[in-house]
Image 1 (spheres, rainbow, N blue to C red):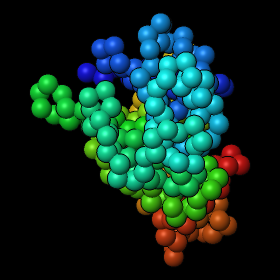
Image 2: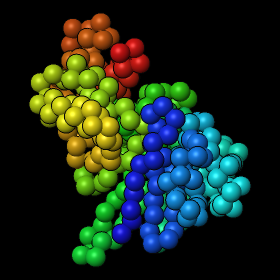
Image 3: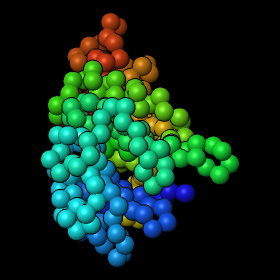
Length: 260
Ligand SMILES: [Zn+2]
């Protein structure tokens, strides 16, 4: 079984630490020191990177120098030793890993999707989605268009409902406050907000999430829901969402969240 744990880094980043027996990998090491500490003397076997932002790559060069490990990621990241792209498939920690291109937050953004076979024959999907899909939210559009981000999120949301989602930031409470504002009738959002506030008060992570929970509470995956369409239309100064498509609702929500 893969053991997957968050290593808190910088202000609100999580570097995800994957291990099995004596093998260790990390995803998006924004800094090196917390990774070295988490390894407790063990060696690092490899690094995976989702996109080029410094808070996801800042520790990679130091870690490679120390452990001589390969760095898999998009070619836009200068530290990358092994480029991966849409359609790449490899085996990491004995588990098949597929790579998708999910532009929107940045143009080079990748999704890393592990499909782990359990002893009972079922498959557990693990999704590392960097700054694209957040718990109850999504990343800002720094490089891509609303249409690109919408389609990237739609693609991710078609993964199995049991998919575990490992986002790169602890943004969940803020995202749920926003979700609650635009979809006040959604009781699952209210419940999740209370649960996540309690976790944060105890200094515990609100992650990983899972796809069923995101489909129920993440407004950016729910752009076709009537209450959300109405909110999105209001933000655009319209009385109702007549004539607006889901991408336009998505774009309205993303703009609103940027100033929330
Ligand atoms: Zn980013």
